[in-house]
Image (cartoon, rainbow, N blue to C red):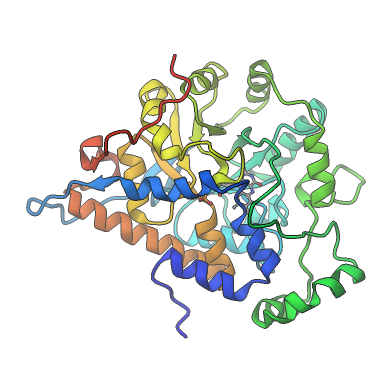
Length: 390
Ligand SMILES: Cc1cc2nc3c(=O)[nH]c(=O)nc-3n(C[C@H](O)[C@H](O)[C@H](O)COP(=O)(O)O)c2cc1C
């Protein structure tokens, strides 16, 4: 079978065949009934295009800037804890993003150290949660600065919702011998995934090296998660405090409401990402693409607006840009690419998106992603959702 795949849907199918069931389940994620997860892709499909047939542009430019970094297409890698998908994990993703001229968000729950990821791609944005003491957060920011992170992403939309109607994968605290024996039948049923790890000489790492405190071992994923759960959520004053501690571009990820977007501007952020965390979070939050136009109208002239959740096609990217985003962030699309083919699988996904963006620009008669406007899309009645209008 050719390693190349033609759509993200095929990458997902291959990830399903290649990954052990629980690892695939952890990527699929979602929460509760999956209402938000479903709406994220359904909403993109509801939007239409209004193409031209002549007077089209022979040259089409996809380059733009995000958080001060030049990127060759309006798509960046969203931060995810990519535990156990591939032995090279986030380093493979960083190499792919560098090869395709784009930037990458690295989760604080990632399995590879920031320095290794920055060595593979200098355009890395470090992602943090509001987690632990203020001193611990300051130490993490210092760590990110010293490692060369170009911007900070702060994700604030998590609401600790853990149940799923289709069942949640069991993820161990550590890969002890007992856990390996329990996991063995799943792994043996996926020999190609297992072989990748055997060849790398490493077991899937379930620790979070970017949260290591001096003189201590890296915390386990669940140890770090417990600390996060136990941290009282931040006020807007806390957000402004956090922002003031970082002397570079600052993205607030997870905004859905107009009033929150306005407060984020007051707190001094550089950018917001309109996001429902890929539907992994508070289920029944509408698809961000529905909430985007109102947020873009309210704050688009003051801060950069990104969007994530549900992007699977180049045409989705173009729809988001037409409705007011500067660029999008992708999550599952590249995780499935990583599972299907490591670094080249992620490059394949970025190439699919680039090809789809190019087709849409051609059809719409645009010569640059910066020319897209709302007139390029057909917005059905009742499509948009204005959350927290002031
Ligand atoms: C398996 C998985 C792990 C994730 N981990 C993080 C994380 O550590 N930090 C974060 O800000 N967002 C995390 N996200 C959310 C993504 O950054 C992004 O918002 C989401 O995946 C976008 O939706 P999409 O998957 O439909 O593209 C995670 C998403 C998935 C699917």
